[in-house]
Amino acid sequence: MYARYLKISILLILLPAALGATFAYSLVNYLDIPDIRQLDNFTPKSTTRLYSDDGTPFAELFVEKRIPVPLSEMPKHLREAFIAVEDVRFYKHFGIDVRGILRATITNILKGRIAEGASTITQQLARNLYLTPEKTLKRKIEEAILALQIERTYSKDEILGMYLNLIYLGEGCYGVEAASNTYFGKKARDLTLDESATLAALTRSPSRLSPLKNQEKVLSRRNLVLKKMYEAGFINRQEFERAIFAPLNISPKRLYEKKTGYFIEYVKHVLEEQLEKKDLIYTGGMNIRTTVNLKLTEYAYEAITKGLKLYRERHPNVKELPEVALLAVEVKTGDIKVMIGGKDFSVSPFNRVFQSKRQPGSAFKPIIYLTALEKGFSPNHILLDSPISYRNPYTGKVWAPKNYKNEYYGQVPMRRALELSLNTATIRLLETIGIGDVLYMAKRLGIESEIAPNLSIALGTCDISPMELAEAYLTIARMGSRIPLKAVTEIRDVNNELIYAPEEDREEIVVEPKVAYELVKMMEGVIKNGTAKKAAGMPYALAGKTGTTDDYRDAWFIGFSSDLLCLVWVGYDKDKKLGSGESGAQAALPIWIEFMSKALPFYENKGFEVPSEDSRTLG
Image 1: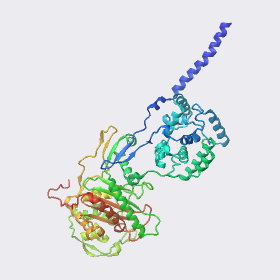
Image 2 (image 1 turned 180 degrees about the vertical axis):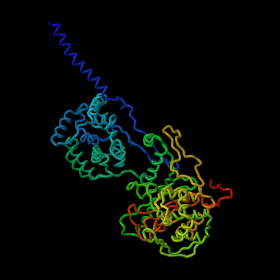
Image 3 (image 1 turned 135 degrees about the vertical axis):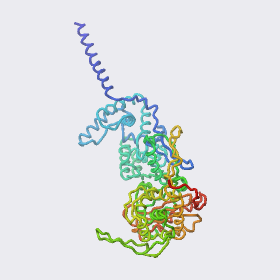
Image 4 (image 1 turned 30 degrees about the vertical axis):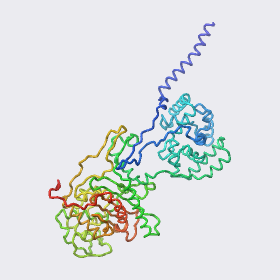
């Protein structure tokens, strides 16, 4: 009898153990539990660095902006702020807070919704490191098991330190040190109580609660964190009352974005086209040499500031400032030295240089005159400049384009018609040489946008990007030799191995050099004797063209020396006029003059060279 009881007893003991072992084996195979010792070797993804034309580092591209610091470098009230709002029993549980789970369950049942969570700091660490954010039973089990393993392997302080270095706090910042630097311009060890509570307030929704975007909601959430710190006994009543009335004092360090933000975004666009593995842009630790010149970029912003100040003085009752785009390119290389796509990148990152399309107005006219020169017309060919009108045979509507200020000059040489930007003379020239040939010339020069074939293109009524127009003018300045604009000169990987460099010989002769030279000399006249006479006093050989749409919505000036080309556009993003008289010469040219006066001394003062007899011809 005794032996029988013994056998039954052993069976009762071994059977649950066997079933438990079987369940555990099945669970482990069902779940995907990583080795938590990976934490010992954790390293953040590598940051890509951008360098200017002289080798100065000016920007970083990253997925995770992280500056790891030890827990000892974090003030006590910073640690307690996160504990108070995320896991007040952190130092009392073993990775899973059973009491917290029961409390959250009751609260959620009473409120009829998910009003309170129960994930511990250790569970959040496990989730951030190893798991996806999906809310499934399998994922929750994995999270709990990982939390238990982490608690068995690391001390509470080690866990808290890893958590505070890993947590995402908005604006690309991972960890409290990066966030402290971004939002307050200081190290985490120097944070005040209210600033620490602000960082802890961001954990629930870092993007929505960014202090750079929504200070009112951040303030409310920060004060909730302070309340929880007071209730937990981390701070006394006096500290609590003093902190809840403290202002946010946000002071982000973003000067580089203000100066080069538009160029940085364009470089990202270029990299996405050049690199097969797109993730390397932000995680590959690459060193990228670019064409941008930081000093010239400063000069450009100074010129834009002065130009907009003059505009405000002319229109004191206008509340909005118009937008501005400025692009400066080296003529010989096609290197982009300055790219400013708006007056303030932090307010509007939309890059008006290459993302927008605007009507070029009279700035399109050189393409028409170049087509005429290619067809054998002389710069002294006589054009009739007088009132003109056309009746649409289908609608009966009459189109009667006029000259600026309604002034007409009768019989004028072709060069004078370009200098004075005469509309009716240019329309008659376009009729003579043919719209199709002009559109073909535009494509050869670099304008890829579709242009409707009608006579109004003489007034620049088509929509093209400033970058396209700059490339067309660059081809003219290069005496008919077309090259692509360039922003990146080399890319090296994390081991400093060269992985990209632009091709050396990429030019294409699209216009006979002597024909292009004739147009350049005519465009010199625009500055010496025409609509851009304000620039005539500059001690350089310069050519260019003003551009104004007939409704004053767009003002342009594109001009160049033999070394540097600069395009300036001024206008509103919305369907709004700049104001009567705000022509290219009035709104855009002063900005161009201010910038080029400071930029051109960096280059040799040479004139436009006459193409030699053995110049390469159109292939």
